[in-house]
Length: 280
Image (cartoon, rainbow, N blue to C red; front, side, top):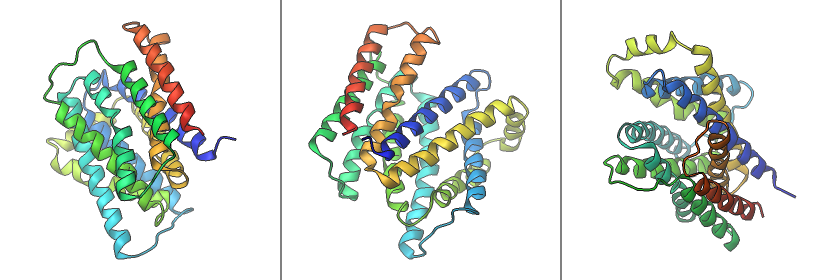
């Protein structure tokens, strides 16, 4: 029988892919990714505040405070680096490098959480990483100055995933989401140029579509936290990342992205094997 946290992680990944698709669709006509990031964190904070009335759990201690502060700072930095990644790195390069999260998350979980998986799970993570890399790799990988941001982004997100695991033991999901959103919600309008004008412009167009994209992402985050709380962070992250195979298939069959179709299908097949091994 498949464990419930595996299903939850799978659903989280699907929701995340849906959100990414919607954001990419919207950004084609409104290219201000920083505002999308700020708006996303605002929605995360608002939803978290609503749920705090029903699920407020927090073990007060100096350690808890340090963990939550670390998470908030890591999220703000991660978002900044993530935006730099997309500003300087081609999408094909950043997509490949982002797959290294599978490796970094498992490594950090072993070092900092003492999380030791069965051998077959490590094999599954490697096979999934291989499949996703094959499915997304371009014909050529050119030297790109954005690669350093892509690698740093992958590492920071892996750190955040492990912080999720630690903080989930001392705080409920709404508390975690609220804390991680606050630095970005407050900080972005302060540091971004012409932030007031950009916020006003952002809110005047396609607000319902932007709201849908943001809420889908918020749901993905809550499901991810739920899965990480009850399952090994390495495997949860691998399954979460593995749902990218559906984005590949959607691109082929619904968006007409026929380039390198054989490679994409082979990569998808390999990734499916990895996900299957992780389900044991």
